[in-house]
Image 1 (cartoon, one colour):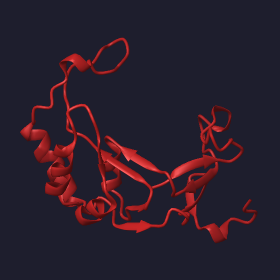
Image 2 (cartoon, rainbow, N blue to C red):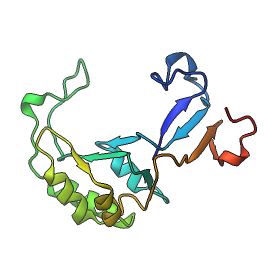
Image 3 (cartoon, one colour):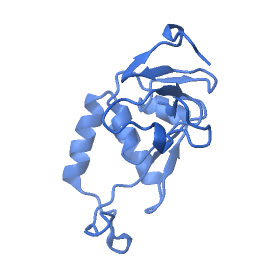
Length: 161
């Protein structure tokens, strides 16, 4: 798990608009420290072969919600959202997590710790125990670079600044 700092973008705006290439690959560095993965992201993370996060990364889960969307904005109407458990959805999600080697019972328990309109921040030990992540590394370790859509090792990058 990492956050991307695109080449040529200021530190406070790591994915500045002028460096995002709409029909191609933007180039940048992947940094471990301060990365975050909330909402549906932990389910994507669970699908990874290697699921690594820095000690100061944030993984957050919440209760599953459902409700009608607002057509004009595409956003859900908060006044009619329900956290009522949908057994069919839970079963599909449990099968997926279990197939990925993630303990679905642990994930559902952590989701249950979130308030109905909040996020539960998963501790590194919980994420490791449940296999949401499979490795923790220090915040100063850097996972590598992304150049033209492929990950490369730090040692393969010729002119590191």
